[in-house]
Image (cartoon, rainbow, N blue to C red; front, top):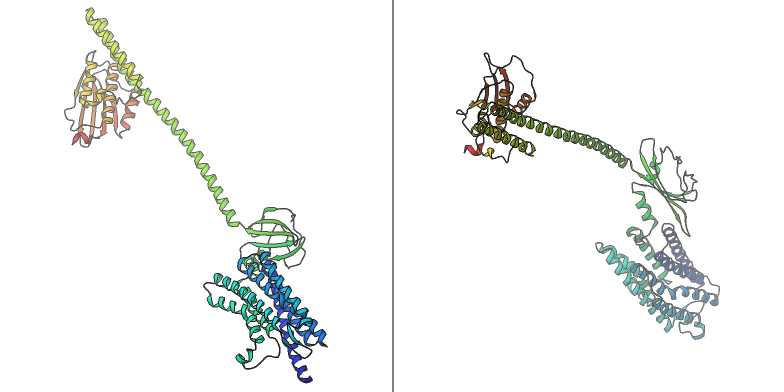
Length: 568
């Protein structure tokens, strides 16, 4: 029997030491790659209870007597009695993201403490172990009460975890089911061991409690799931993966040492001009930066490859960390776009200035053109009116009849009054003048009537004019005729003027012929220049010349611009 005991003890220790090594290794791996939080702390409490359970099992196996063995049993149940509330705390944080309330945990911990006291005081009542000695033990009624209590808490925790699994991984039902099963493995293993179902299911009975080892297997599954599906939402591995793949350079320093950097940072700092970063970066090495990491910094740097890099330093001060988080952002394209935008803005400003000058010049040209137009109109009206008045006054002076002289004086006064009204009018196009509703022949006949009352005879011939002309063209022809008659009376001392207006092919010809003294050569005054300007506005031509014997002729040709409305 002693040899069998030694053999069984050897294998019990071997399996439990292996489970303990696996538990320590996996938890150390998780610890090094996680940021501490409520969820991971509760996870470590579970692992600590499991480690206590395994260590106590090993020590119990090699205890020298029954009293020492019972001491390690008490240590074992110090963890077993409280593993249920610890699992509830972990499941609650995992499912809801916050720690359970004291109202929930206080009664659970009180019951666990009561059950632990029952285990410790078992030699007084033997209700937990009905039999206990160096070679073996048998369970009493309170053992099953303690197990039932733990089963109930484990079942509640599994439900909470399963609920979280299925809500988080709705599209991955298989993974969620496996995780829920993994969480329930230790409880299932303990049930079939305690109640003797192991041999009925598997055909043999294990020589020791397999619950700690099954918990280790469950831990492996859960740890793999934690890193596969990121159950711990603040894992360092997740941060490292995320920060390594972003296009920004990241550097974390504590005082003057490098804590961490990503590959992007390593590539960006090679060719800096005004910051001398080490060519070979290593975590833990000392680094000297040309700015104070205790202060916020935001400035631009240029690399030797003409890349523009924005450096942003933000200090981080807490109980566990005192350093800075530094970002390098490549803003070359942004700077180029800003430069192009600035160049375009400068070009736009230049063109705006140019357009403003052109608009000002155009305004001045419009003002000058308006002044010239007004001056030309005033010249034509005054010239026409004054010459008529002079002629009427001359007739009145030579008249022997007082009534006839008085009549010519009244006509002269009316002409001067009309002249003043026309000069004062703002619309020199005479759009409000009733004469505009008349034909060009009627307009010219009225003009001829004004001169016929003086010392000159004006004859109008428009018999060959086929269609009614546009109002603007009629207005220009009327003003040319008025200026031509005025010039004939003023400069040529003419007694007769013939005006001929006719259609020829696709043009309109105007002749103003007087019988005055003529001239061999003449200088173009304001009247002739005004006539040429009016003709040029219609892309026409004008020619002024003296006749062979006597007299003067003005010959103008216009492209025919007919009034389509009046021709239908």
